[in-house]
Structure formats: C-alpha cells, structure tokens
Image 1: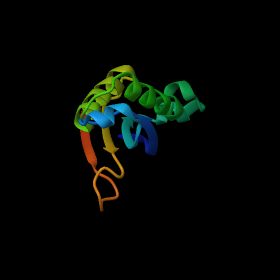
Image 2: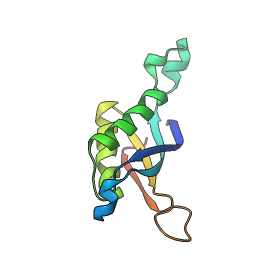
Image 3: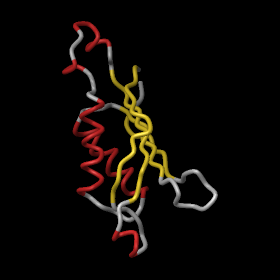
Length: 118
C-alpha cells in the first residue's frame, strides 16, 4: 500500500480537561499517514485521484476547532473516523502531540491506527 503523509502539522485549538484549558488555545502537533494507491494519480498527473494533503491539513484544523473535546484520545478517535469516511481512506495512522503539557517532556500524546492496511 502506498502512503500519503502530513508530518508536524501545528494547529491551535481548545483542548483540555481543566477549566483554564477551556479558555485558551493550545498547540497540537499532528502526524498523519494515510494508505492510498498513488499510482492512479501518477498515471496522468491528476490531483483529483490522490489525497490532497493541503486540503486535508485545513480540514484537520477546522475539525479540531469545530468539535472541542477534553481528551486528545477523543479527538484522535473522532478525527480518524471523520477522515476515513470523508476521504474514503482505507487505513490511517494518526499521532496527536501536545507539546509542553508535561514539564520536562518535549511532547505527550496518542497514536492510533484505524482501517485496514493491505
């Protein structure tokens, strides 16, 4: 399976369990790898036959800001479902990091895989 990826996408959104976190925007860093047959797009150099990573990057930020949640785990699960269904992606790996959330750690977060990788 070919893969299309977005690495180090930095977005600002409201996320967190504590009341003070609900009042501010925080940075999340997202890495996304999506299974896709890129040969179809490459055959005739057609953007419409691949995953448009610029569009998907914008949709990720929009989605995170339209559906605020407390936990990164919840955001990862919901975002994965959204991407799988919206773009008909057969498989993805999604990593969401929250830099600065834990003192002395560069970042903390979750990484999930959903769908079927062939």
